[in-house]
Amino acid sequence: MSLERALELALQYPLTKRTETLPLDDARGRVLAIPLASKVDDPRFDNSAMDGFAVRASDCSDLETVLTIVGTSQTGGEQPPTIVEGEACRIMTGAPLPQGADAIVMVEDTDVDGDQVSINGPARTGYIRKRAENLSRGQEALPAGTLLASASIALAGTMGHGEVEVIRKPKIAILSTGDELVQPGSDLAPGQIYESNSQALTSLVESMGCEAVRHESANDSMGELRTTLNSLSDCAAIITSGGVSMGEWDLVRKIMEEEGNIHFWRMKVRPGGPPLFGTWKNTPLFGLPGNPVSSLVVFHILVAPWIAKSLEYNEEMGLRLSQQVSVRLAEDVSGAPGKLCLRRIRITSENGELIATTHTHQGSGNIHSMIAHNGLTLLPPNTDGKAGDIIDALWFL
Image 1 (cartoon, rainbow, N blue to C red):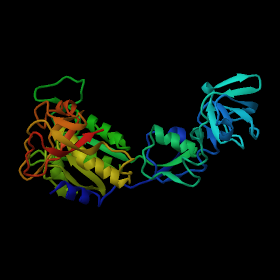
Image 2: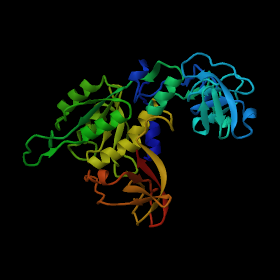
Image 3: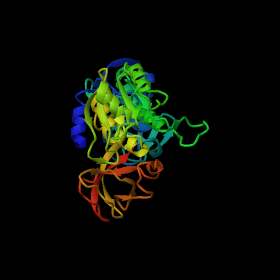
Image 4: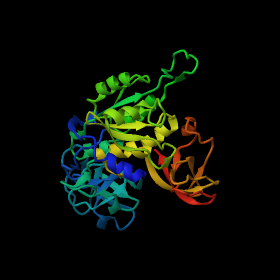
C-alpha cells in the first residue's frame, strides 16, 4: 500500500499520550503538553534599550543642549524621579523609564560636568522598549506540542512559568532478530555479522522524545521470539528489525500472522518495501526490514510521523527528524516502478537554492550511504529525476 495509507492505518493504534509536570530546569528537550500563556506583560514597564540619559525630546531639538541631572534609573532599583523641562535622568539598559521622559540619548552622545549633561547627539524615542510590546499578560506564546529548546525555555521563564506540563516519554521496545547477529566488540564466527540496527533505532526513538528499551537480539526461534515479544508487551510500542520478508526464516512476519494481528504488510516504497504493522497483545508493533538502510528509512518516513502525530507534536515547533524541501538535482536519479523512490542525497545550499547530489551506491545494506548523505528524494512512482529538475525531498535535521 502507499505510505500515506500505511500511516493512516497505523494511527488507528496510536501511542497513548500521558503528561507530567516538571520544574523548568528539568524540562529541556521535552515537549509541552498544553499551551503556555504569559503571566506578565513583557516588558513589564517602559524601559531603555541603551545606557544613557532619559530626556524629553522637546528639550533636545538643538545640539549642545545642557540639562540638569536629577537622578539615576537602575535595573532592579527604586522608582526613578519624574523629570520636567530642562532635566535629564541617567538610565541603564533595561531600567524603567522615568515619568515625563519620552526619549533616550546614548551615553556616547553626552558630556557630563557635575550635575549638568551636554546633549551632543539625537534623542531617540525608538530606544524605549514599550510595556507589553513583546507579549501581553494572558497571551498564548508557546503552543502545545512545542519542543522546549533553548529559546522556548527562555520564553517560558520570561512568561513566569517555574514548572511546565510536558508529554511523558512513552517506552518503546527495540528488538533485532537473526541467528547471524553478534554484539559489536565480540569475536565473529563464520557467517556472523555485527548487530547495529538496534543502536540506530534506539537513537531515533530517543530523538523523537520517547524512552527506548533496547533488548538483546533474538535468535531465529519461534519460541524465543514469542517469549521475548511477551516480555516487551508492557511497553507502549515494539519495533523489531529483520524477519519481515518472504523467507522461511522471516519469523516476525510468521509469528504475527499466526499469533498476532497484522494491519498491513509491505509498502510501495524503495528502499524499505516489506515492513509490517500490527498489534501483539494489544501493543502496537512495527516490523522493520533488516537491511540497515531500509530500517532507518522506514523509521524516518513512517515511525517518526506516527510518534509525532500520536503525541500531537506541533508540526512547526515540535520534535521531528526531517523537513520537506524542494531541491534541484545536480544529476540524473532513477525512480522506481510503482513505488515512492527514496534515494539518498546530499543537500547543500548553492547560489540561493538547495542542490542534491549522490556520493555512494544506493544498496540498502550500505549504511555508510546514510552518513555520506543527509536527505532522501521523494520521487513519485514511475518517475525518474533528470539533472536540473526541482523535486521534493526530505532533509534530515
